[in-house]
Image (tube, rainbow over all chains, first blue to last red; front, side, top):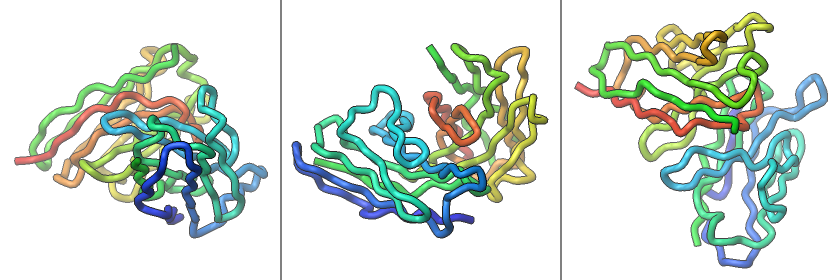
Length: 111
Length: 118
């Protein structure tokens, strides 16, 4: 199975300051069709996860442009340019290139 | 509005069965695969299984932890996907979410809670 390793596990942030989360996979996530099936999700307490970024760097509709995704192969990063209060919660990375699909363990972002 | 609504969660004893439903609306159900994901209390997300579109055979894949015990199916006439859970174990206790797409996971339901306990 592809292991997704997120760091840090916990990320104290300051409002208005940048933040970044790393996710590393144990195998390359580049699929034979040329796509990299890697997503980022955000989950607030008591809520369902919400997709933020798909295929590494594509921001979902309605996601603020302070969020950006980058990376390739086995190393990926989610960046928040200026943290806002609503950004607290847990962030998960996920790969859908290899079966079984796997999630990272999560990064808890708190002010 | 595109929406997924899970139902069927309950308190059940170990070894018993339960069927969860995922009702889709606001989009053409036939055009998308459906995944099930679960989250144990205080834990992270775990992929459970997946069913392809009927046009691609409606085939399924499962996580090793549930393979042989859980079965995913879909009913295009009702726009519903099902998760049949047999031989439930205490470690199956979780909130179960359905989500859309083979790799998209772009729409999630609100989740339904399953508690396996004697």
